[in-house]
Length: 107
Length: 123
Image (cartoon, rainbow over all chains, first blue to last red):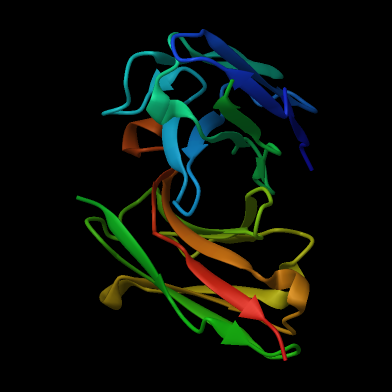
């Protein structure tokens, strides 16, 4: 199985901050990675697919990069509605695996 | 517009079999490249991928749960059914179904999700 790790596991930030979350795969997954945002009691919402493609309707302050084993999600200027938990998902090989999540809360 | 909705029991007893139905619209599971997956999330914990079924009836399962899971589709009803046998309290979770596609141009994996259904396992 491909293991996905995320760092940090949590972070506190202020509105307007630039935030970067890292996801690492235990082996190469090309660009077969998505990023999801989840708010309490809600289904995950995909932000990024194919590692760096912005999902339609998602604000441009979200961006993704990386390939192989290391990936990043960047929020260029954190907004109040961005406080949530973020997950990465690899779908390069079965079983698909999610990262453990990164909780972003208000400083 | 793609929508998915999960349905099934909210409470099951230990050792019972859980049957969940995902009813979807806005796409067809007979279209080449399309799939529907199931993902669960125990309260306060991370997401876990469970199973996936494709347009050609190819089925994939999480190895840790494979012996307990069965995924099927009814293309005419636009439904995917997941059964999980021998339920245990540790299986208490919100269960989601999601649309997937094998290529990014068709949406890639898990672009649309249902709202989820909380299943509690307790006697």
